[in-house]
Image (cartoon, rainbow over all chains, first blue to last red; front, side):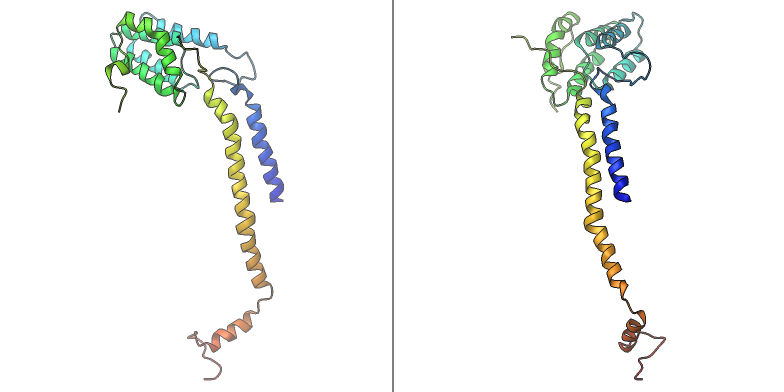
Length: 141
Length: 76
């Protein structure tokens, strides 16, 4: 009798994983039974807009970054560009550099992501006068 | 030589797709292995021991060995 229970729950676990096929869909997959899923572009523009608010305050900047880092993705260069410009408006160089450290950490074992992002952000970084952690020598323990 | 855009989304989801069912299956498998290789033989051993256990006979043997205080060996 127990063996039957085990077999049922094993297949139950497997079909549970299969029904979560929205993992293959972009980003923070909210598995709606209604409505359509947000596309990657919509997600990106929503966040670019969030950080582009002219009177964004320091709390909203930090809250936005924290929320963004919680997702199963490394933010696109355009989102980071918007966030770095928000840091510039708030005169917050520390947060700007911290954002770079955060995305490097977020990439985890995928070491090709951070150099790519720095490459994409180079114009913004020189325009705003933001040094990377590597340039400052603070990337080593 | 500019870098190509790497994959930046869904990496945890991709990993969990494999490893979450794997985690469930391996813990299940281990639990079943323990059940059928350890607990069942242990229960069977106890059942076998007590199937033809004569408690009266065992008591007499212990009594003769003189381990009780409340009852002396039959010789004394």
